[in-house]
Length: 109
Length: 115
View 1 (cartoon, rainbow over the protein chains, first blue to last red):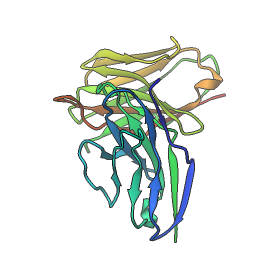
View 2 (view 1 turned 30 degrees about the vertical axis):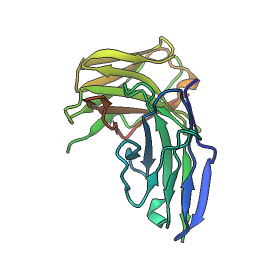
View 3 (view 1 turned 90 degrees about the vertical axis):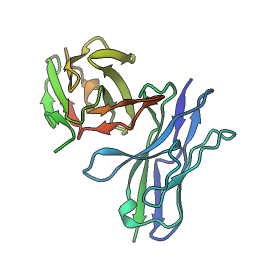
View 4 (view 1 turned 90 degrees about the horizontal axis):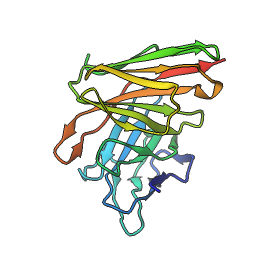
């Protein structure tokens, strides 16, 4: 079955510390993977997608097909990074996003 | 202001009632979606329409019926509301591009509370 797992419900770090939000997926084909973010009182919005290989707001995510992972990383967390982060898989390129359970990132001053 | 908008923002109603949530996008996208976010913040797709045609229909009770009068609108009608329908419902839209679909743009959500 196609599934996305984010094992951490809450990740709490201090400002300036490195951050890694874990995401593992279950899919046998070539995955289309995304990270979406929801800041407090804002809409859910795309942070980055693996196909673009961009770094957005200092975040990067590398697809590891061997480990079926797409972890989100940032070397130095900022307080404004505090938000809910969702990893999502589009297995059939139809827009049918399968979301993980979400991880709340809390960056303390 | 180009965006995805939903009305109402909050909806409180009694069990057994019928209610509708409206969604409109002015981004010129051809695909629209409804998602349900439960109390644990888990997001799950319900439906997707492409140019007014239903293309994704997940395992959702028949009481839920989406309606797309045109490609800029996708409304969600819910009959005989149950306690378990209480959730935040998100509308989203995207545009088909070569090889798939582009990023999805989400509405602000409608918080439905069934008493």
